Structures are given as structure tokens and as C-alpha cells.
Amino acid sequence: MSGIWKFIARRLLLAVPVFIGVTLVTFVLMHIVPGDPVALQMEEKMATIDPTAARLIRAKWGLDDPAPIQYVKFLRNALRGDLGISYRTDRSVLRSIVERVPATAKLAGAALLIAICIGVSMGVVAALRQNSALDSLSIMLATIGVSMPNFWLGLLLIYLLAVNLRWLPPSGYGPAYPYLIMPAITLGAGLSAVIARLTRSSMLEVIRQDYIRTAKAKGLAQRRIVIRHALRNAAIPIVTVVGVQLSGLLSGAVITERVFSWPGVGRLLVDSIVVRDLPMAQGCVLFIATVFILMNLAVDLSYAWLDPRVKYE
Amino acid sequence: MIGGSIVGLLIVVTIFASWIAPFDPVRDADLNNYLRAPGDPFVLGTDTFGRDVFSRIIHGTRVSLGVGVVVQTSALTVGMALGLLSGFYGGWTDNIIMRAAEVIFAFPGLLFAIAIMAVIGPSLYNVFLALGLVSWTSLARVIRGAVLSIKQQEYIEAARALGASNARILFRHVLPNTVAPAIILVTLGIGGAILAEASLSFLGLGAQPPTPSWGSMLSTGRDYLLQAPWLSIYPGLAIFLTVMGFNLLGDGLRDLLDPRMQP
Image (cartoon, rainbow over all chains, first blue to last red; front, side, top):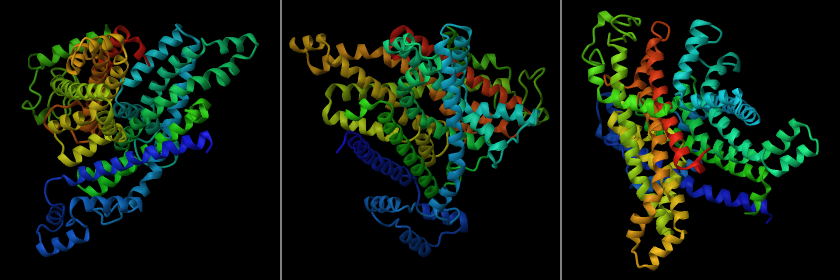
């Protein structure tokens, strides 16, 4: 098997036990809730608990099985795409999540694009103009960016751009312009600050290398040196950190969706926790964690493209 | 230095909050002062219960710093212990500890804490527990990495040759050399824990009313952005300055103690 396929196979195999661990933790978390969930739901919906009906519902949901059997059934069903039925809406949990995925994907994608464009540009400029006013400004903005709570930034943007200037709507879901701009900036700002800092330090290391000096001596244009030679080599640690920061992006999406009433998976998760809809909360947690595992896998696989030496580890 | 000054000021405010705050953050509620704009005597305005925002921000320092310190103390204790054991003994110990850390890492940052809050219910004390359960992983991994390289040093080999027990080598020789990265991570981690608590409170999963938490103040402020923007601006500024203070202090400590850890 060639190097690249061995590399991919190894990474996929490593993801499997992590996924199983995630399903186990999610199952345990949602099943150590005190009290009988059936009785709780019946009490809420009907104000009385009919023992016979409760017994039938418990059997229907598989809650009378021993915990290990419940876990195996849960895992088997999850692999088949069945995440259970919402206590609140009686609808399929997976269907409810899937309906919300496009909104979260749009938000996270736009935020990542903004973060990479702004962060890499700022970092490259700061590195090429080290110790200049631009460099100092870039470092200051990056420090502010990593410290600023994203929900505060979102509220400030709403106050300035929606309430005062009335350029953009304060909340809601619709076409990218005008609805996605503020949420994407809110979510992407923190990550852009991290990327800027890392790009700067990574570029500073790379531009001192001999091959960059050789490229300059050969008379190559500055832009070609930066993009073809420097940035590609500086990208590896940046990709590593972006991979780690993706967790912050997904967590940040939960909060950003609340600020802007964006109907994504994150908002569904928080709403389901508030009303104690445990199958929905469980499904959302499992879904987001699975997406995160797959995103990390994609980041790992991108190393092989960026640095061919990685294939032969 | 800037970071140290901000953190120093926060510590002073936390200790002397009751003397600095002009009003009680919970009991001094008067609906006649509903959503008053900043002015005399309410320097930063009032909220929907007529409570002084400045006093609530001052007392909120205790909540935020308390969470930051308690969470990072537990992260330090658990993370340091597990990191030392994992790195020093290796084998099954290392495997079990690192796989547990990986499973927690597999959950996006705050998500695990949110999932735990879903189970145990929203409250400030549950925030300590939830954040404490997830905060040890980074520290354990870094300490493990440091121990792996320290283990190879000649002075460790010399100590072993002189008959030192594993426990003695661990506590006398390995542990002191892991203090620098631990201090840096804990300092940076306090800022992260404060931000996490504010985020959980903003979502309604953290400190419950009437406890003065900056995150829950912002959550209320969101609904009154048009009429009372001060409810959103000032608590958010407090979170921002606090987190920046700890980040700058952590960066400074890193430059001083371990420049290799620079981003």
C-alpha cells in the first residue's frame, strides 16, 4: 500500500476508538440524570403519572433494559443514523438536527473564511514589516482579538451597525447579505487573532531560511517568494493550530447563534437543555462531536498535501 | 507588566468589593430606578430591577475570579498528577490517561461543559464541576511532554544509579522542572476559565439570578440593547479587560520562563 493510503488508513483507524469513547461519554452523561425521564415527561405533559402507560413507554424507549444493553442499542442506532425521538416534539432527533445543519455550516464556513483571510493577511504583513508600526498594530489587534468575548463583540456590532447606523438587521436568518455578516465576523474574529499571531511567528521563522535567501538571490518577485515558498512552509503549524481551534469555532457557534437568534444546531442544543429534552441534547452533542472528529481528520490529512514528508512517517 | 497591573487591580477589587461598591448588588433593588442611564448616583446605570450596574460588576469580580482560580487549581492538581504519572511510568498508565484526555478533547471546548450542565443542572457550583472536569487535559498533555524529555536527562540517570526511588526522582527532580510550563498554562487558563464561565452564564447555564455574574448581565442586556446599551457594554468590558490581563500576564511569564513555548 502506498505511503499516502497507509497514512489515511492509520488516521481513520485512530478516529474509531475516539468516536466510540465520545458515544460512551455522551450516553453516560445523559443517563446519569436523576429521576425517571418517563415520569418527568409525563408529569410535565399531563400533570399525572399513569404507571401502566409509563411502563409501556419505558419499554418502547428501551429504558427497562440494563445500561450496557441500552448503550449497545444506542451505538447501533447512532451508526444507523437513528438518534431517537425528541421528548418535546415527538419528532426524529436526527431530522431536527439535519434541518439546522445548513445554518450552522453557513455560519462556521463564513467565519472560517473571514478568520483565514484576515488572520493570514495580518500575520504575513506583520512578519514582512517586523518591528514597524504595522507590526505593532497587528500584535495589539491580535491580543485584543483573543481576549474579547465573542458574545460581547456580537452585541457591540448589533448596537453599532443595527441599532444606531441601521445598516444591517440585528438578528434573524436569511441570505448571506445582510444576515450572515455580523454573525460571521463575531464568530471569526477570535480565530483570526490566533491565526494572525501564529502566521507572524511562523513566517518570521521561515523567511530566515536559506531557501528564501536563495529565492531572493535568484531574483524572484517578492509576491512569488511569499506565496510559493514562505507561506506554504509556514502553513503547517498554522493548520495544526487551526485544527485545534476548530473546537473553539464550534463552541463559539453555540453562543453566536444565541446572540443573533441564528437557527443552527448550537441553538437547538441550548434550547433542548433548557427544556430538559435529553434525547435532543444527547443527539446534538453527539452530532457536533462527530463533526469535530471528522474536521480534525481532514486537518490531519491536509498535512500530507502540505508536507509530503508526513506521508512517510 | 500591564497584565500584572490589571490582575493586581482585580485582586484588590475582589478582596475589597464590599467597600468599593456603593450599593448592595442584590438587596439594593428599587423599581423606581428601572433602567436609569449612567449618571449620579449610578455611575454605570441601573438594570431592570433598579440595581446599580457598577456595584454588580464589582461584585461580579468575585464570581469570575473565584471560578478562574478554583477551576485552574483543580486543573493544576489533577493535570499535574496525571501528567507526571503518564509521562514517568508510560505503558498502560500513559495509554489510559491520554485516551481519556483525547475523548474529552474530542468534544469541542465548551460543549463538554454544556453537556455536563445539561445533566447536573445550571448553577455556579456546577460550573466549577463542569469546567474542572474538562480543564485538566491540556495541562496533563503538556506536563507529560515535559516529563518525557526530562526523563532522558543525565541527572535523572545519575539519581537512579545512586539508588533513588521512583517517588523521590519524581518529586525531587522531575516535578520542579515542570513548574515553569505549569505556571504559564495556569495563568493563561484562568482567563479561559473566566471566559467559559461568562459564556455558560450568558447561555443561562451558569450563575443563576440574582448572583451578579458578568455573563448573565450580558444575557439580560441583549434584550434591552436599544433602551439600555450600558447593560451590555460595561459587563462585557469587564470580561474583556480581565481576560486580557491574564493573557498578557501569561504571555509575559512565558517570555520570562520558557521562550520555547511562544506561539
